[in-house]
Length: 281
Image (tube, rainbow, N blue to C red; front, side, top):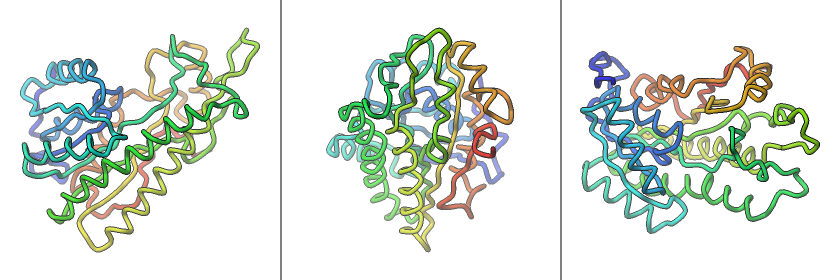
């Protein structure tokens, strides 16, 4: 159990009283972003589309931070009306919105028990799965950001953090998805790389659009978060990184606090890459 820390008070990392929205807030990293911002003093609006996951996430976060100021909202990021109502509800409750973390995304996982049928070869990748990812990862980010920006424009300030991936910067190393004793190769889907590369472009566009304002837009690029992967995959992935390991989900707390806070006040249109050195070699 953690206490909401006061060690950030008086520093550029202090988020006391700031209102933060985290989409995909019930996800693996979404929950960590909520905890991180709460630890720096922020009030958090956790948004997700799964009612049961939202409840479980709230319990987990409040167990870590019993005095956390956290509200939960169910919304479908690809439904414009759902997004609009969600953002307006958050604004009505808190009066302002200072931070948006666009964490909602479809990402085919290679963890134990995962459905690897989505890891099909490029010529056979289904258009249905392509469109589903485009809708959530790109259109969902666009719709949520659009609604929040209407509020941030009136406030004259705000920090928007979009979630990238090492696979939005370089192509996936498909060798790490090949399994011993499996005759058929599994492949990281093409659409994930396309979406995450698109997020970088979207971020740069929006940062330049808000030139001369105090609305900042940046990318946080994580990679390789350990979550119940088998040892064969962990070994293959780790050997591809400079640090020779997968990341821990808590290792992105510092990055999201930095981008959300005044500590990054001269940073916009940039990409904060936390990938264990994956994209450096």
